[in-house]
Length: 201
Figure (cartoon, rainbow, N blue to C red):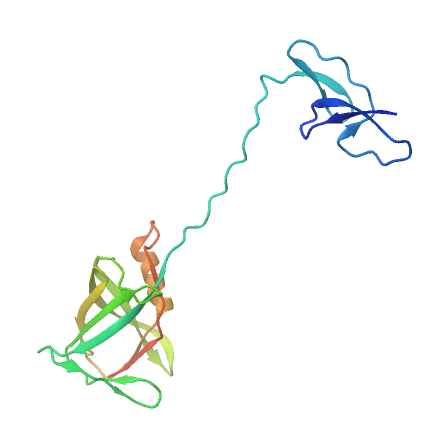
């Protein structure tokens, strides 16, 4: 029994001998094609043969799918707090890991933005606002304060003071949302990952 081998597009390749009783693969057609002519080749159209111009047919490469941009997630290290006279302050930490400060004390903050290996990254941004969320019963109550910082070659500096006795938290989640808004419609150059900073004044 004769069969006719076709390629994935249906173009006729060659004649093959089929074994009686053996299952016929999908790549083999049992209907005899017409003879090829100059520049025309038989092509199986699913239920019949047609002569097609193979020289004019081109194969379109699949369109590559866009990949999601990879935004680096960076950490914070080497945090130093000082007063208005540049005296280093060691905050009191209670049993709940809350940092205690006196209201109306000017605080200067200095830290580094680092990668997963602890290396300071080369990022520079002016007037970036870090968000501090006021807490009520350990939950955000909607009031926020903003710590304006400058980043020069991965080194962060800024200053602020607590005007009243309040509880604030600085979280990576809230500040990453701030980075999204800061850079809209572009993507932020990085996200932050750090343990929540809990401040009591």
